[in-house]
Length: 80
Image (cartoon, rainbow, N blue to C red; front, side):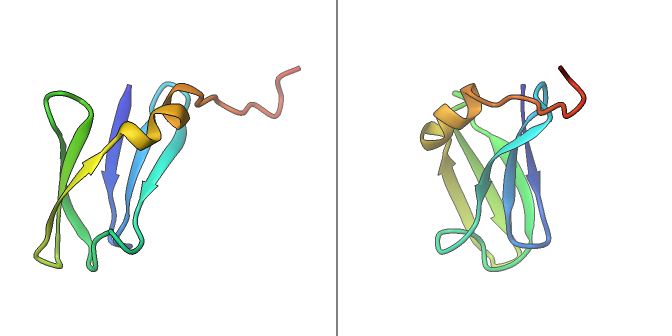
């Protein structure tokens, strides 16, 4: 299961809830220039849209993150 989180630090994080890890960070040159207020997945599951305090609406693709999503694992330092 995937979860998106919006942040005041102008970033969007994609989390693998089952593995409890952040698998992608959407920020930088193509990112928002103000805090991110709202995010939502597209029905096809391959894209999402975000809106921020910079008055921008952005459409993002998850296709570049597919390898990170499928290889996400939980690190357990106490596991043998």
